[in-house]
Length: 381
Ligand code: BGC
Image 1 (cartoon, rainbow, N blue to C red):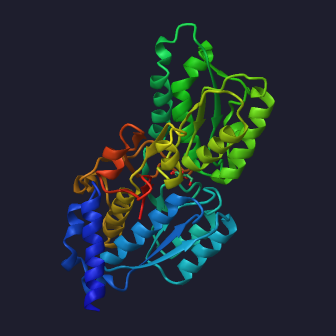
Image 2 (image 1 turned 90 degrees about the horizontal axis):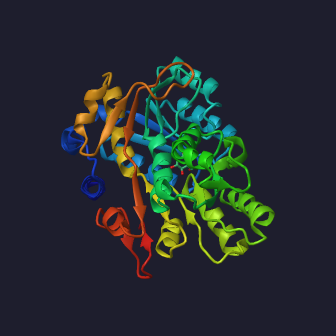
Image 3 (image 1 turned 180 degrees about the vertical axis):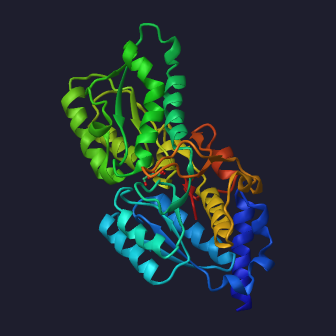
């Protein structure tokens, strides 16, 4: 028992020292472990284990809740929306006191969350906003529009588009899952930067596919992004047309696009490829020069903010902007950007960061998020 406690404390100390966002209040673990906490249970509903980041998010949240003395039940729903509804129903039946949910389909939780509300179970939408339900109390995420903006600006700056003169570049666009409310924010953030250059002709989308619906990738699936890119390469680039840029909204789609370029692109150049998340496979591509950047979101910090918020809600408080002063990382309280169809959901938004081959050591290794493995590539273990 003593060693288990020690283990938990060690995890907490590791988390607190690893990340830039420890909450001032979370460090006082002895009082936090008061007996009134041990009967409080938090339900955490994650989408899938098949996309790397959700494994990290789930583990961080569970560890941090447990380190504070709460019970935590964690579910993964294999990216199947019906299964997630079932899993949430079971968490409610298990009498959880609070739910933290990453929605697989933001539009499909209205009914199950009515049950949560009827039973006074507060809901935190984690990373993805849950739509059309007044049961969502708060939203914790990164600034999703900025994620896309950073991808667009990376392309703009790397190609020096503002000074391109008559020079033109060919680009293809790959966005995320239409069922994920974030996907539109990412895409719009990037396209708002790139559109003036597309309109001017500096950037040319050779396939002509620019509407979100045409470029979206259901379930953020790597194989779907790969297939679509292979089709585009076969239809528009087989004659030797040069492909200069692939905007990809995240790393799972970037992985598919990179594979397609690797196997099916006839040109001798390698296009710029963007991403998001810092998945291990993509960081390997980054080091190999195949992916140009990833927008890194320190999900350990997202967990810190969520746990601190949950703690306040469970204590019967109504958290507001003052909560942000506890955090050692930048976090804004936003009451204008995220309307889920029933009104604005108060949001705590963290700040994403650009990682490239030039700065990955400083951003990812020196910060302790990743280690350099014996093969020279980054590992999260
Ligand atoms: C997250 C991204 C992630 C994507 C696919 C989005 O909601 O914000 O970080 O890449 O889902 O899992």
